[in-house]
Image (cartoon, rainbow, N blue to C red; front, side, top):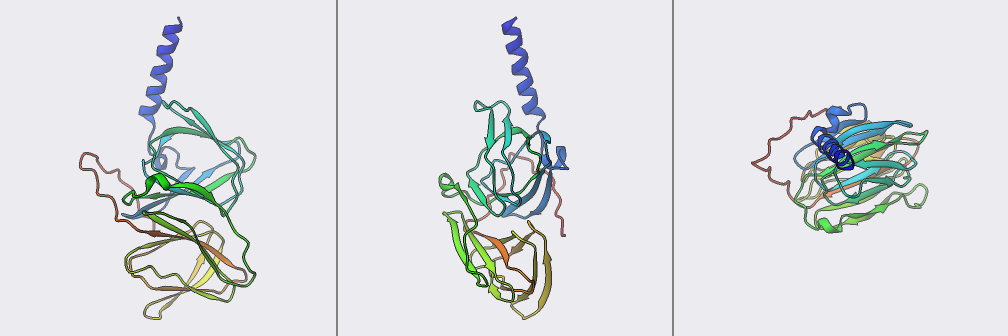
Length: 257
């Protein structure tokens, strides 16, 4: 009888792993594509209060997790892996975590009465210094009314800088001549964006909104809102990985809003 139960349990685990799919398809209320190109994929994640999310898998790429709300512990129940369930500790809005590439299939449970909202920023570039991709990074005390810029993470693949543009002030956020840039709003923002030709565009950003600057793209932000604007800046130091010819690319959409 014990052998039979063990066999059935093994089959269930294997079946769960086999059935796990792209979260954008099997958990559409929880995972939504925010932005994607050859360099990066940004997915907005929402775990509702006391919600359980079905089994799904993630691309085995290094990633940053940008937390958009305060949240209590969340349980990740891994399928067909030796370490089983892992509890993510409580997180604070505006903080982020980086971690190396890992292939996993899991279910998720949010046992709290409050939601958990964050961005999963997947790096699609060559993974140099992958073993250095770990750590948690938080908001810092900054002078009121002043701009702020600090590199909080840097390795061979990626550089992540925390930026604050004070109300009524401007900041240069241009991409470098060799590295494209992803910008993520950590606070709601009202900005005027000026390009290299001096053309200005009004931007109203919600928390978690992502924007892309190609290599060499010039951009200056003027904060026309009443409060400081906080951003995370990702500079990509390596090139996009070449696609695996033995793998069929999964179709995906490219939303523009």
